[in-house]
Length: 84
Image 1 (cartoon, rainbow, N blue to C red):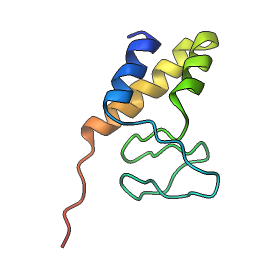
Image 2 (cartoon, rainbow, N blue to C red; image 1 turned 90 degrees about the vertical axis):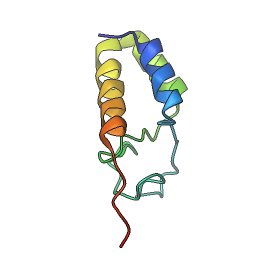
Image 3 (tube, rainbow, N blue to C red; image 1 turned 120 degrees about the vertical axis):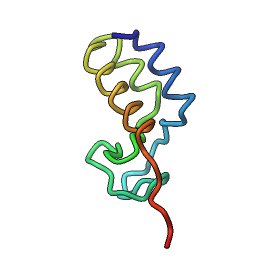
Image 4 (cartoon, rainbow, N blue to C red; image 1 turned 90 degrees about the horizontal axis):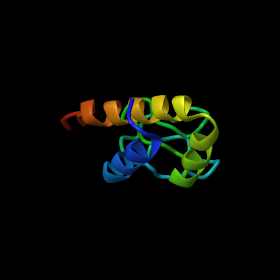
C-alpha cells in the first residue's frame, strides 16, 4: 500500500480534489450524482479538500489510503460517454 502523501500527490496530479458547496448534488467533472460526502462514484472526484484528507491520514492512514486508491482507480478507468 502506498503512503497517504504519495496518494494525495497522485490524486492532485489527476485533479481529483474539487471541494463542492453543500448545495451541489452533481459532479462538476462528469455530471453524475454525488454521494453524501461530495464524492463521485463515477469518475472518482473527491469533494473535500486535500488538506482534510491529509489530517485524517495522520489518524487513520489505512482508510484514507483506501479512499484515495479507489478514487484514482475510478478516474483512470473513467471514459466520458460519447455525445450523440
